[in-house]
Length: 423
Ligand code: HSE
Image 1: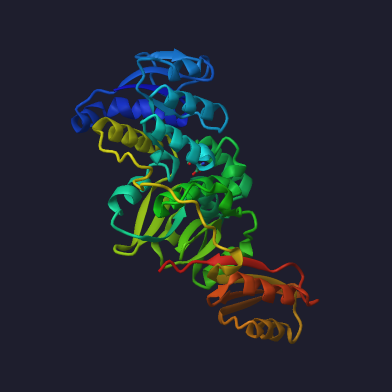
Image 2: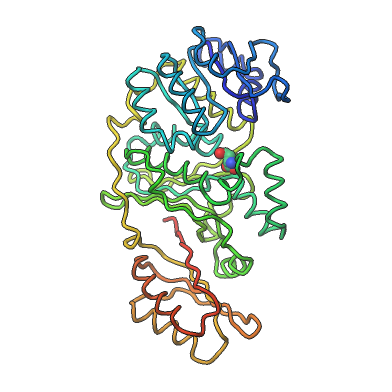
């Protein structure tokens, strides 16, 4: 199988290295040699992490997608403009495409998948979600007997690394982010990691594959990790929870809920104990029950492992001609945010005066919101109050919070954080 590679950075260089070190075992699985014909880099002067002597190296990416010898193009440059042009050209030239580019698939996937289908080639992207974890293959193949009920995942390694280091070592946000960048975990624009955009790209892909709905990145409600304070981490821990930046998608009736936001998870759940750059995805199927997949969510050879798995699938010719194994993807019906039901964690900073806690609980009771746990600690002349509610609709909770915020004892707006019990 002749392949062309666009980009020899962290992922592309990793692919060349893994293909080289595992040549014999990959051949034993496929019965076919994988031959790198040509690779494109931004500059021939840049430092490259893999050997390049055995193939043609060019600065002209179009030469690779137009190279008649190339049968499969690996798009590993990222971005959604030039990368999109290259992928389209490759597909129109009748080449299969494998990409690790979650932004490209999440935003233009519907159109690109249709184009691939019309040209009878495959467009595969296992490496786009959760790095080295074969999560798309698990959904499409291993869980194909199930109706998927929900998915909850830690799907951004950089964000998880930052939260873990801040919680366990008290390290500074900027310092940990710089380390994640040095290690090659972070996106070219690291705000994609900390603001949740990268995780939202991946969640949109997971939801589509799980529920057979079209890719709908713009329907993911996204919140970053910057609103989490040291007090939240400490209070949550005392109440029995860890805070994770979680991607969650659920099918409720015909509607699909998709959100990426800081979320409390019971400390006793395995998912709550996934730290550092590691990713983990929990999937609940209606036959198998809850399942959990864990592994490196970023990094050179871990991501290369997923890219090469797609290549092996193409060589073996065992892929379904349908998108994600669904005969057709349906338009998505987005869950009304007011109707989203969950347990919630509320953080309030209030004046430390008699009757304040009573006023808060009275308002929650008025909206029929039951309280699971309350924790109060002094904060100078004020008090930090954290509350964990029972299950309630977001619309009702927001109405109650609006009434609480209208009282003059509040020192700042009330923070609302989702709690997922994962059962
Ligand atoms: N920046 C991403 C992460 C890389 O940290 O998870 C893998 O998609």
